[in-house]
Image (cartoon, rainbow, N blue to C red; front, side, top):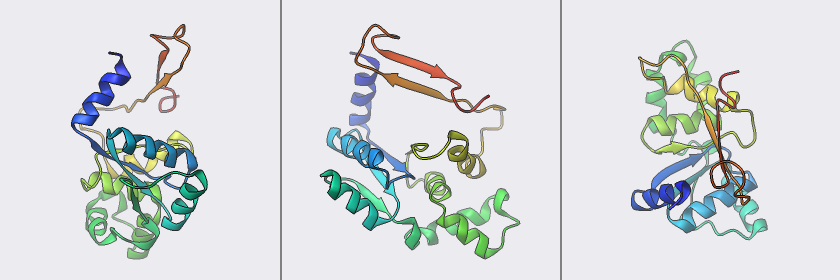
Length: 177
């Protein structure tokens, strides 16, 4: 069994809630459908509910077993506002500025992750990695013993000649220049 198959089997045994801050993107909706269909996770699409439904309808993608959270309507703001108030990075903001942070999809997704409402966050489809990570680093601090964050990108391709059985592991592709 290959790495991806092994990971999928583990996820099927213990599915995780995966939040996608760019829930209105067609590629994200397609990925969420695959995750739900394979039963390897519980996708949470963050974004405008009607826009996501329209995109899914145009793409002929079912949204059953996919949760949609509309961060623009403040559905979870009463849960997230106390958490936001407790974070030093936002201590100098006014109440209005803090509410604006909740309406930012990447900040909202990071807060939902920090609040335990999601187990993982997948972002960076429509903006740079540094922009995606900025909200995470402001809301979820690195462990005290760590000084550097890093990243790894896994590319899986049909052509088995490249990498290990068609899989390439690219480290520090976007975080450390």
